[in-house]
Image (spheres, rainbow, N blue to C red):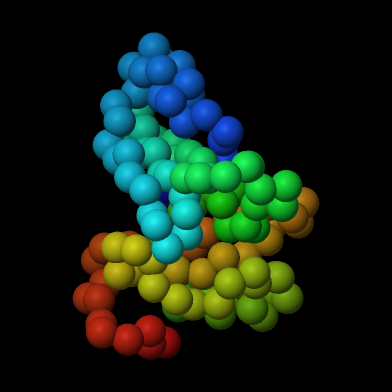
Length: 131
């Protein structure tokens, strides 16, 4: 299931005003001091958009590679991870925890786009990253 699409922006307020015209609902507008980023999440019927804006200073000329990505929630997290490994897919981030505590990893599609693969909420969350 498609979870969200994520982009970087130089003006989150301008984007929020635009997407509110398209009947989006702001579900998060928060700053992450450790990453020096503002994160804005807008919910639409059938999908979510997420935007990152530097909280201070100039816009990075080379933003972190995970900022722009497409996120998927999957039921067979371990199986998909293993199949992608077997097929030689490039992993840009190995299994780690998302801010919500779910396991996730990032891969590149054949055109180099970042895909976040996130475990579904049906799996019990353990205290440490496990496979």
